[in-house]
Length: 358
Image 1: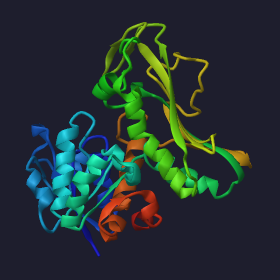
Image 2: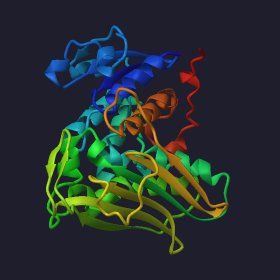
Image 3: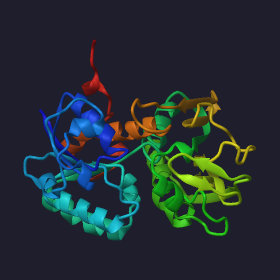
């Protein structure tokens, strides 16, 4: 069976999503929605950096609601326009379109999503007989399927720690870096991303997804945050000046306690300058990486670093893997029973439909 797909948004996730659909044997790209007038009328392949695909981008969102569309890859941001994004999602699901996305963090673990959100989306999914699956890299596959897989070769496991260690000077989203993440901002103001509510909304669900995979009951999720100022003024290409004394690095931990024991921890060590917080852990790979550290027998450390030709910055490989995770899940999401899906609800998602010989 061939599933017809629309990609909504052609930024850091939408571009690799188009490429992944183009190489997937069971998917057909039938539409691309853009918000930038300069992209309207351009071929999807051109926007994604590949050969023309014969699908022209449009700013008419109604193409995503066409009855022959099986799934929508919602790659538009919800960080800066949450109400509009969730209204889009509700309408898509009510119309019968299945949705995969990296945008809607509370749905990473539907069982712990806010009741008011599920109260809005559940009737829409029931009316449309549709499903939604939210993933990414971190939050996403680096925090669920990867550590779950690693656990399968362990014994006597006492802790699983998943780390993101990155320099965000190479992240192609300057507005997010400054205004959401808060790098370059005043030290006396806690940025949005590091607020307790944000940590519990975005990363606590991933702790619970992993706990579900390991059949562990989490008693409580706790957070810690540390920040460091820049010790010098720096210039970052594409982002401008980051002044001495503004926030240059942070480290947070989101930990799931089981029986009072810190069993599952998500840790971020993030810098805008490699020289900031030199005593904190540094990545083994230029720009950054994701790492799973399992304490037990044996002690295992798995490091993941991706590169994506043509994508800007060290985050390009991570963004591509996030998009690919969603795209490769489309057949399973379309075939699933209606509802909000977590990774535990889906069969193993492999790259079988992406294999190319020669």
